[in-house]
Length: 495
Image 1 (tube, helix red, strand yellow):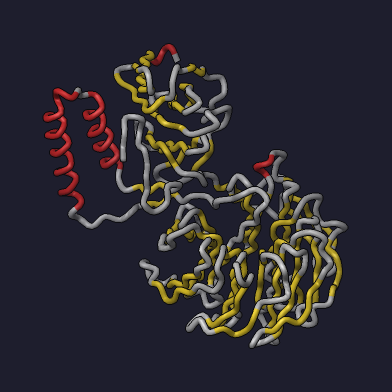
Image 2 (cartoon, one colour; image 1 turned 180 degrees about the vertical axis):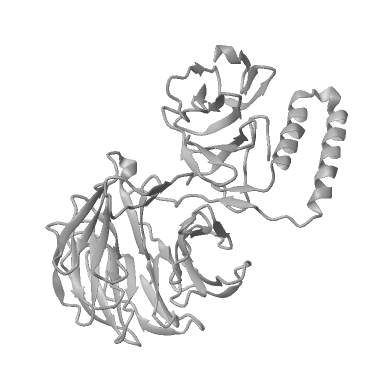
């Protein structure tokens, strides 16, 4: 739906993403609704005729096959105190994360290239590539796992299983892509291991008394499974068929991540106690602790360097740390900020790319040669987009979200940045760009402007409104705000 505020995006795929098709379509739809907004009820027949004429013109173009030129993808949906699982591509091309009912497949070299899988009927928690790279398994809040094709654009469904009766938190594939283990908060069991082709059980996940947060398959024979639970333990399973072997009890708080090294010689565990331990991959005997402790806050994730010589950890203490595996000593520390949103909730090491995810949803490309500054930070939205407008020359797209943030996007490339300064802090209901300023109206009952040149709300005026705004437009040098109880008209000079 489009409205005089700009463009109110309600995507059937994911409300946090933008699908750019053509500037012409945006231009026509704005004016169609502008007519509807301005004309009175007495002129409703004229509005119908105008709208019908525009719709007929749109339908003529709709007969041609259209596809999105770009998808400006949503950021990962994060929650405080909850680890996020990033999925790596064995072919090194993409990485995976989830938001709402969608799985986002994003090119790791050029994050502006993205694909979206939207076939889940409830929120998706985790998605992982098979080691062959031909399939992705995604697990949702209801306990369903969908296995789907990565080769075809349609992402054809191969299988769907319901292994546990509650939210799935992690998925791991066996190195031959034939078996899978899923863990989470099932009502009858906290995990299950089965054949990916048939769903046939190939073992039992037992021995832990609380929900399981993480799991991993040993990538070499003899096969092993490890799981990390909220009962502070790590469980080890041998198989197939997989049977409980032992628990490890070094952690004093929730175990949030367990990951085998690429060779399978070691596995690492990380917990909310800030500690990271290394274990032998075959015998599961404790090798030693990394750091003492590794972090001053809970550790949310670990990622191995492809050659297994280094380990990356991310934490709620707002840092990522790089460790030497042989000596278990610190190599470098990446300080990501000093606000709550700078807590680090996930990490991934894929080829030459080292990624971390902040609580804000920002994806950070870490620079191993300069820990003081990331190579790149991918920004955007991870809450529903409520308004959208474009600059006068259509070179920039501006979007505002349910949580009050505004992002500017380059139409040609998808490069983006978040508008700085004190914004609305909650849902934005109207937005329109002028020559030098962009005007926004939010449910904090204010009209604000930010400067296009500086991309910032700093040093701009804030006007209080008497009731909640519902829409905003610019006409002949005037900013018109439609509120619940009044209509406000300001000249641009007043702002």
